[in-house]
Amino acid sequence: MDEETYEQRKARTKRQKSDPLLKARKIAEQRKAEKAELIAQKETKIKNEGKKQHDRKSRAKKLLKRTRKGQPVMKNVIDDLLGRIKSDVGEK
Image 1 (cartoon, rainbow, N blue to C red):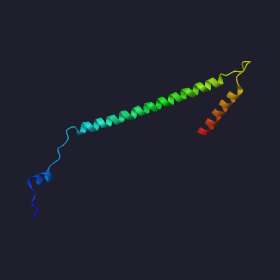
Image 2 (image 1 turned 60 degrees about the vertical axis):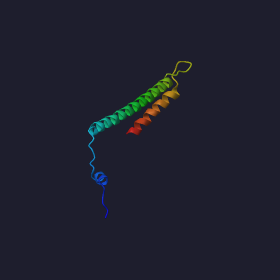
Image 3 (image 1 turned 45 degrees about the vertical axis):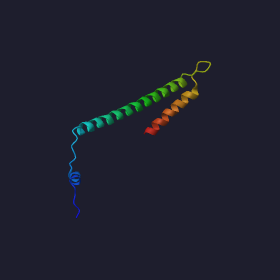
Image 4 (image 1 turned 180 degrees about the vertical axis):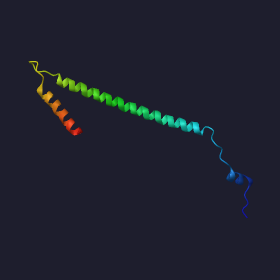
């Protein structure tokens, strides 16, 4: 017959101890994930703001260009107006 030793029986019936810090660890992990998500959102927001600012500066630079006689360069003005019209039509 197959008789179990005391150690084998003890190993088979041994209970797992409950972790007293399990709840605190879960909360800490959840907060860490939320913090990482907020940081990622801030980074994307900063990138978008930088891109918008760059676009505004380049647009203003084009629209402020003048000919030798002081008139605005019409090519840039017309391109800007055409771009606005296309974006308005695309939104609707």
